[in-house]
Amino acid sequence: MKGILKYMTVTLALLAVCSVRVSAQFKEEAFTQTYADPNDTTMRDSTDTMFSLKEYFGGLSHKNPLKIGTMFAGSTVFIGGGQIYNRQYWKLPVIYGGIGAGVGLGTFYEIKYKKSLKAYQAALEDDPLTTLTPDSKSRTAAAISFAGAALVYWSALMDATVNYDRKNPKLLPGRATIYSILLPGLGQVYNGEYWKIPIYWGGLAASGYFLYLNNVNYRRFKRIHNEATTDGSGYTGPYSAETALYYRDVYRRYRDYSIVALGAVYLLQVIDANVFAYMQDFEVNDDITLKVSPVLMSPEREYAWAPPQSFSPGIKLRLNF
Image 1: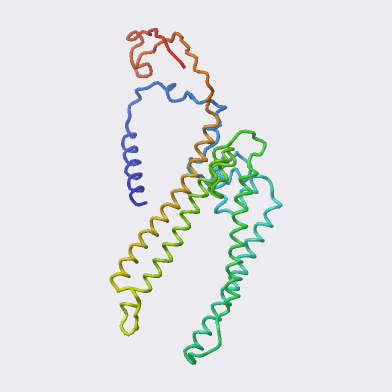
Image 2: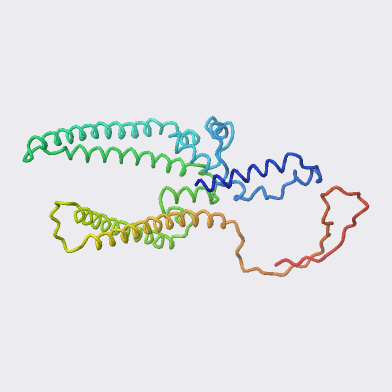
């Protein structure tokens, strides 16, 4: 990340220096005309524009339209923003109430568990045979409550994405991308490419399985190594300290590889959903007719400053498939 920021800073600085005193060598029309098709959905919908707070809050007040990527990015921080933009205000109490209740109950049970754990540790110091145990039910209740709050938060983002511009019949690449971010494989469902789902889910499942397996073995040999190198531990296991150290490092490396594989598969399915949603507008029929047409050839320096009599147009043939 530091390297990326460094290169970005250097690039922006060079652009700023080079643009301070640039002579006006080109006609103004060369910079004001546009060549993009206004009906092209790839130009209308994008998730790669820089986030703007002014644009975002202007969209929430319905002063300007928001791209789906801007709406989603803002809603991850300003919870409920997507529902406000979609004019579904009645959902806000449900979202805020669900998240607030989950966080509140989770905090309550977490504090209760920590108090019981502290009491257990104090009792254990006084009596090693104490029957007092930590309140495991409170710990479970805290985990469930926090998970419920996270589920409501996730549902708010998904709901905002689903209800964005629902009257538009065309596929939106931004929506396909966000679908895959929120739920792997959903972007492929949105694009109608159901056959890809087993591939990506299989890749995620395999990566997750090997991550779990390698992490279990890493922790196992780490524990064995710690016991084998601790004086007075009485360790008599089948592995020596050197062997345990070797396997600990091997499984730690495999665990890291599994994390990389899991992230790579997840990122690949997001990119796949975005790219193939863009490609829905591409013409892929079997018509490869050759078309020959004359074209007026403009001078290379048409937009550069030069006396008008210095150049003259030419004629050429254009071949299109």
